[in-house]
Image (cartoon, rainbow, N blue to C red; front, side):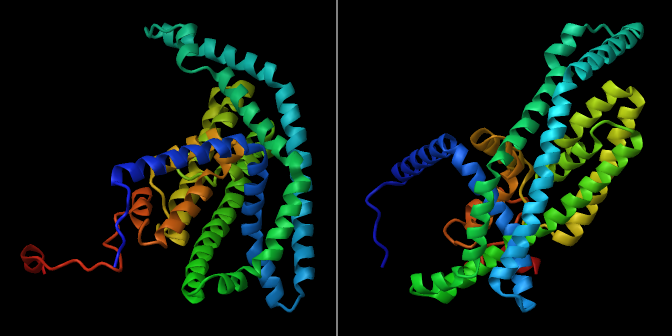
Length: 361
């Protein structure tokens, strides 16, 4: 027998909204601590399956963790050294690139005016300021490199996450009255998240390598940096590839002119169509998809709350939230709203036959 709630539906909605605002405000205030922790969880989720694979090969748990941490430490050291040095060089060269962009902008205005299109430099600066876009890119890259200064905290947190990963099922069995049901939900949740992040990481690596190779062929400055940016922003589907393409296209315009910038854009378009529209849907399926609107809103929301790392982790965080709600019948409706599909009725519900539906069969 269900107990009637002492609060009306409107009051429950207001209470839930107030709790949400308080939680978001707390996350924004604690971003300095929360960002390294979320990044550690993200790294730990990626490397937990390889750790379990090493254990299945007969290695002790401590040895497998040491191997995984050696890999993470090596990759992190290379990333910190490269990203820090490249961002510093790019920032120091910003005045030259901004000056070149302004010159290209003036050439474009002259070309348009010669063909009867009356535009001014002030109009372009009001609606599309390339120099401001380059400054925003530099600030974002500086923010990403700044997070990596917490490398020791991130490394220690990842170690503890890997140590706890094997004990978590045991804790669930001890904590809940119906442990098998809770454990099955957790396994389904962890499997979905691991599968999504594993496939997304592989495709992001492939995207970054192809972009790096193409920009190196074109002779663009900081080609490896833009390949790394393409790798990171590929975790944001639909619009991440567009955001990653803007800085190198502007740089190609400033460094080499119009046609190399067009070739740069064509390369990004070809890579993202072949991987994002062909390979990813074929191998990953669409069961974990988010709608394009949700992807954009999650990018804005998590970027506002957590900064550049929030933009990077926006889709994985929203995806985890969506998968968690799918496993609970009471919140499944919200997961359906976040998705990009139109699923049928929940498994627990039976759709009654109607005269219209019987006639169609």
